[in-house]
Length: 451
Image (cartoon, rainbow, N blue to C red):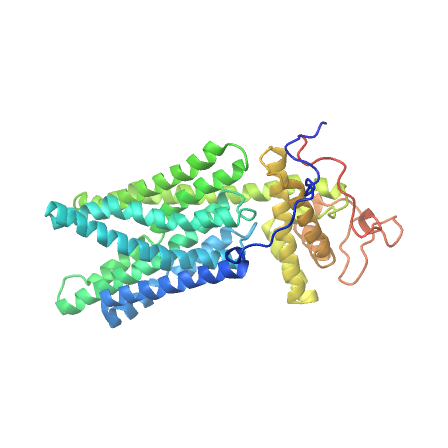
């Protein structure tokens, strides 16, 4: 078939252009330093503001209670991200942005807007209601969306679809909810101390039950809608520029509306909160959970469907597409490598799984006409990364494939232990799996973007 001109096999030559050294503000260490400084300063300021609002004792109580749901939420998003995991630095950035930068933006902007409305209308009660139902959703969701936008722009190669958007958005919102819960729980504790604990129900206990027990997923649920919008934009790649802009904006708007409805539930009467919680929050949470799991399984199916082409070209072993397309087999491969060759080999197997998944997702984008102009370069980089780790990964993946589903493996194949050559029955030694003797196999004869 004819090759699409939109995806050249090789990058164009520089054409004699003079290479220019980047300006100092374009250096990586300068950017990282500026980002870390910004987040650190935001953290110090927001924690100081919260401590001033709650008092030292209230701050410590709020901190101890607010941290309880964080490990569970982070673990859930890490589980969702296991197919093609983000680097830890991206997740740490997302959490810190939500906990520090987004929280600082929200507390300053919300306070300013509420005071301005109260001064303009001379109605403090109405200003608080308007601030909670209109100002807060707009400010907070926009501040959290900034983290997703930054990862989308500066980690574009790693941001490949809906799952990535949900993970970054969810981790960011988890950080934001953590700081907000410190404020609310610390303030509730201060209220209890002023009242002397003579109320019918402890304000701290009620706040803990509502925010930590019943709705720890509220902020992640809202911001995940924004992440889905960015994930859909990533799937369209370089095409459909209007959709790439409208989809994130639509996700952000939906997040704001959901947030506004949740904040408004307290004003819907005695049972308004429970009605919104049961009729809206729980179904929305269930729907997004189903979408996350379905999308995760779809990525695994893409791995099983796209990688066999590289088996035919000699880059992968015949058992690998099946093993890489099963989370159970992946975990078994890492355990096997750790037990027989140590932790460094297990890390190499995990990296091999990540690069193979990225290769499968890239190939799917290429076949669908959604890959960027650097498709061939990116494909080569991923194949090189796989080739460098093949000796560590293939025995473990073969073992995992045979143990998990032997029926999917061609007859006559068996895993080779670490330290032994890969030999196919009936083939001369030194040519396991039929790999060429050259340092790198030649590229597949097909163009990956052909249909």
